[in-house]
Length: 75
Image (cartoon, rainbow, N blue to C red; front, side):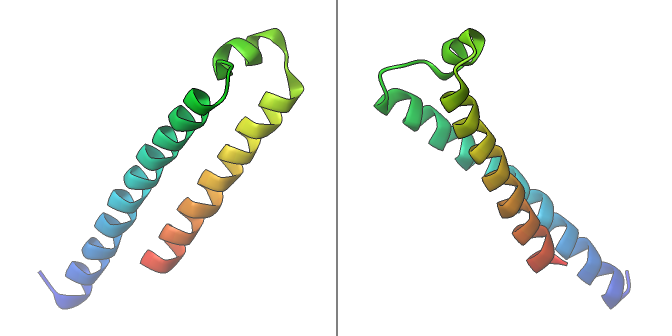
């Protein structure tokens, strides 16, 4: 395998591992946030609570920014 191919493979592995790690940590953060508050996120979303929806939207935006940084710094 050439040096360039191994470099590209290493970067893609970095992106994959970093992305999976970020998703796992965001899941843990959402679970911890749900335990600290006196409500269940999925139940409140089912009721149509806009504030909880905005909080989940912020989590998704945070995931997107974090994954974008991992991918950008990895490649």
